[in-house]
Length: 553
View: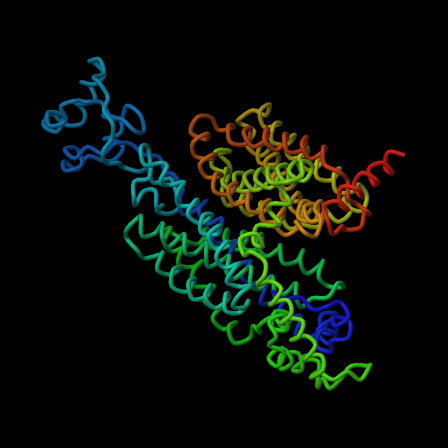
């Protein structure tokens, strides 16, 4: 993407008009509303797993007993060795003598060997039928339950890679349209397909479509909003996710089947189809691509007619200058090896020990924050708390967590704020170990406190990551670090399911130790509060040393 020369940025009437619009206009508010609504829908899908994949009590189904019309409870009391095994009795004989005599027989004789279940019966304690019951995702298939959530996270990762490039090359709106179309097809279809692996594929597509939609709308918002509104709009945008979590709680409470939840979460976002006609292409992207007439048409609908700037330079003159600059850059770029050009930033990032250290630490911090964030959202079942109340409070407490970093950053700086939030989260999660299992409400409060702090971490490390690196490596460092967060979200359901099956406190404790380690590592990073951003690696290293020395003195 070609950049405008600095002088042209100041004198370009299109960019100046766009800046005026970004300071406050109906156009800006329209972009903001279109941006925040998809975030709400994404939050609904991301947490729906809590209700659609609930695990009911289960035990082995014995065909002989089922065909003889024995009740589920009678089958369980006679045959169940565990939730995944049954005693190897002669069940044909049990059918002949009846339940009462069979029960007497089991009490008078030693238990035979136990065998693994091939089919299951499920209890009726849940408020709805779960996909776990429909597809038998228990025991040896329990990993397939976690795959449901992993597919969504993997889809988001694939979407971030593919649609980020597509958006830069072909435009933000095209990426948005493709995302909406994919969501429109995959969402409702995922609620009706009878095959597990087809559902997993559609879940992956849903994740990719959400990334396409969210990245496109957020990029347009940041490219339109001026400094006056960009910060608070970014915070408000993040609140869309917990709002979706709160709405999902109501949908789940009123639903009697997991497919109804899936369908509702997929039909509501169909409103995004209407946004295709209201969402404009990013004027800033159009200008950078030399498509100035299209950008002018969009800007003039709000700003009014643009004739010339204050220095009497006509648009045609500016366009001529801009196109000349783009042409010169294009000719110069042809002389640069394409492979070197694409990976030059990564090479710089890896060639300096200090930058390597910072990148490794921030990547770990992003991974741990995402892992703990999603693991705690999915861990309500292991806490044995009311899933509706827990999920509702997760969304409710997450909203103020996005506001907490603002005073922290002003008072303590980046490094101290980051480590403090990690330590608070770790302390809250470790405190669960000393709380009696019977004190469910206290356990829930501790879990919510840990989740609150880890949610607030994101508001700090986003800014901190950008400030730790010079311009020549900033985008690569940020992309690498934030990209690690997807691995954290992918691992979260496995942590909850595998460790949760061993001990109810294991997932939260596992996350606590990693969160604690992330907090300790963040203390080794330099402070960046009040320091100017640097452009080159050498400048960054020099300024960092000077700034740290001034803090010590």
